[in-house]
Length: 446
Image (tube, rainbow, N blue to C red; front, side, top):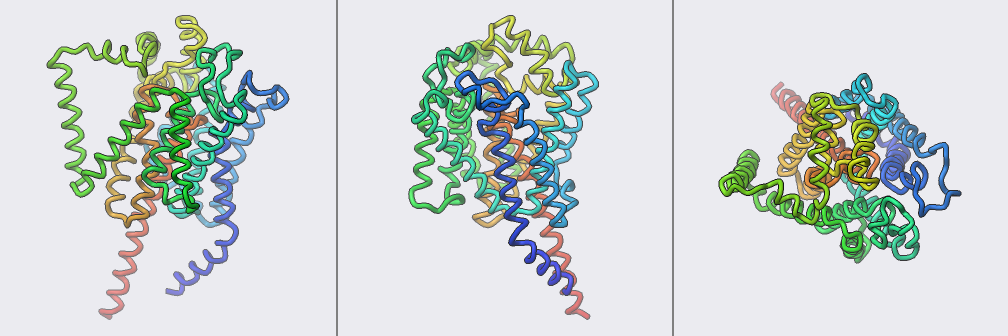
């Protein structure tokens, strides 16, 4: 009993400073990975004045320093065992990204990319030990709202930066379309999809300002329309249907719900086979994939060169595949436009298996845990599961969901790590409570 009281006093003494510092670092950590630092500072953007671009790639250093500070905060709070709450599959995926340096097409690219991903993942799990679930989700919503509203402002009041320009050699085909605070319209579309669903279903967890939720939803839909991202729109509709299915089957046993989903998928696959529909040709005629399916056979041939381990983390897509795709399809084809193919290029079948297991296991455990939680925590878990679910759909159209320095990818890894961390914390809390109850019962018996 005295230990518990002492622990509470110690935590109370830390409360005024460390959680606030951790919350500030959380905002810095996510924004430095997904906000316009990527295009303004670290890449070449013809619509950005050269005076604002630096040759020393300052943002690269920031991305390594901020995660280290997150680990320091966790250590100061006495949470040095935070790695126990990291998904084993995701940890193995990070380890594989490091090992891929040995066979990478560009070892330096694989090294810095693997280091960046690993630091990002470790920083998130460290912050989750310091911050409560509700606080983290509120910050998550605030960040989404900030990026969405600032994208609208940039597109309207600074169209030279917030929209695609004709002087952009690679993206001139998209001239006039919104891109907001991002380098490409599809990134804005993906963020708009996340923002729309988050504030439609879970907006009350964020700001309490009257009408703010409606403003963000309207801004999200506006971005989605003017960005002209068909893949993001399709993903939005599919994810809304998935959430509707989850809520409709909320009272069903978890195993039965997943069995139902598998039966539906099997039925659809059987119908396609029975009717002898050319699925590949059917997909190729879809507006969201026009011109993209032509790249896939070329990419599959590249994957066949090293199917198990790929061509090096991040280097497989950038250093190996990108130049070859540009030769075949021109400058606009810089990647496979498919997240799953990109993982196969980078880390092969082993990497794709680890990634899919990590994401599906978190979704499965997260929905199961949400059913047992009270209303606020239940919606917090479902909010965090939004980006992993959307990334599974959106990865079919784009590579963005698996790149940690892009909007969907950064939020996807953030949610994967945070959800698993809070799941493990919930299990540990339940076990401690049971042990305390057992101790009290023994005391009563004595």
